[in-house]
Image: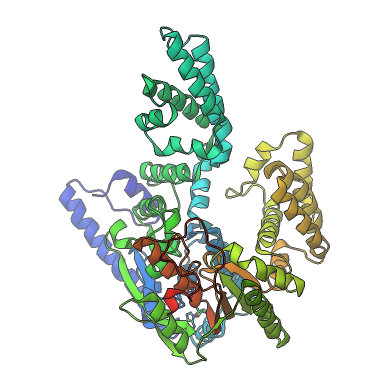
Length: 639
Ligand SMILES: Nc1ncnc2c1ncn2[C@@H]1O[C@H](COP(=O)(O)OP(=O)(O)OP(=O)(O)O)[C@@H](O)[C@H]1O
């Protein structure tokens, strides 16, 4: 049934269905129009397929890329099979076909995956293209001309939370509140109920002893740590009463008053927690089906979305004229601990088409064999290139393992391998600590990831400040939070400054001090930034600076498997491949063990040329360790 509001939306896209008197007549008319439209789109797709990108990717990839924009597409494919590449080609396809880049929504699951996507966009815009892409474009007589590059750079990847925040800001959402930030509000709510209890404006007929008991409980409740406040989101009034006021008569009524006061304070505060953001966005999209402008939603790492994120995607996809393309690999689902997990797109959106890909362009044949053994899945990964077998080495201690990894990196760099092609990955930050130190000693670890992220934030802020009125920008909101006119004036002056250095200085002063409240961690970041400051003088734009820092960052990439997801390097070393770390000690049930298997699968599929795996017996047994974990054995996934 085409509703009036849908028709309005279609009108905007020159696709409106003319209204006829009877519903059935309207339906048949709509069907005809749709059929004609589909034909047009398919013709368009065929010509695109034949003439432009015929040899660019595998057949299936092309099919997915040129698939009708009115269909939902899922590309479920093995590691390194070009999922992200397919997304990029799809974007290019849309831009070549005159889709407004502002209407393309590119979603990543984590900040790391969003960074990865934005980096890819920049690479396509700035750096020489990968050989295979360049060859394909040339062969098909298409160049990434200036206009298309301009369009491409306007496509900005976002996390689902980032999208939700942008959507809800005009509706009054003032930002994100963590549970820790909500805690003072909770305390106020408890205090206000306590005050009303004392002044007898509530429960005037409550007996003296009960009043005293409730007073004691509430006083204790006000002192609870921020993490205890989380219970308020997870439990109902009965459960909360048992937790907060055990054995107290009418506990539920008292709890209800606290919850009510808390909710009122949260509404006045105007900030949303991460969960509330997604729920709010879903509700908003449900109610205002015509209110958003997105016509193409592209989702990377789809397998890691949790149910709230999937709900947002679903509600976007239900919007008439909006197509969803999701790419992912169920065997790379490693965020189950935060609620992530794979659900086929067709379960969310009817009629979605699935394109599986099994050829990995990244992996060599021996690496694909290893990945197949780790993954233990029916469909095997195929690789096109030969190469050396991945090496597995055992070390007596963590220190010798770290020293070896650092020397390995040094040797590669001495052989003129670019720094950004060498990476060491481990299961946890703690397992990478010794290596970081060893690399630092050798001067190979310039800025750690955290500093780089901080730098990126500041550079991003510098970029944003040049267009403070942009609707996507957080700037207007931030302007509102600045305490005094002097600060606002400073910010405006910074926006006018041509030199990036002056923008950076003012921003650093204002942004870092007002937004981050300068806790210890941020002070350290600031110290690191001091190091970078002189270098910023050499650049005119933040983008130039960022591109430079990415290659300059002085270091071999050192990161956890979770951060390495979606990335690739020529030379990769996986350290700590021991039972107890991979799988992690506390993974005891089948579900967690499957996820740990996925973690190993992600780790061994990051290399393009060379993969080395190190392990040493674990000396530290965590408090979660179970008898079954053999801490002096190589990971069971590699045996
Ligand atoms: N058609 C192709 N021909 C040659 N190389 C390709 C092709 N498609 C992608 N590649 C290359 O294969 C590598 C892996 O691509 P990409 O990162 O897009 O894979 P992915 O499936 O997203 O990986 P992951 O599963 O790790 O997220 C990249 O270096 C990319 O340039």
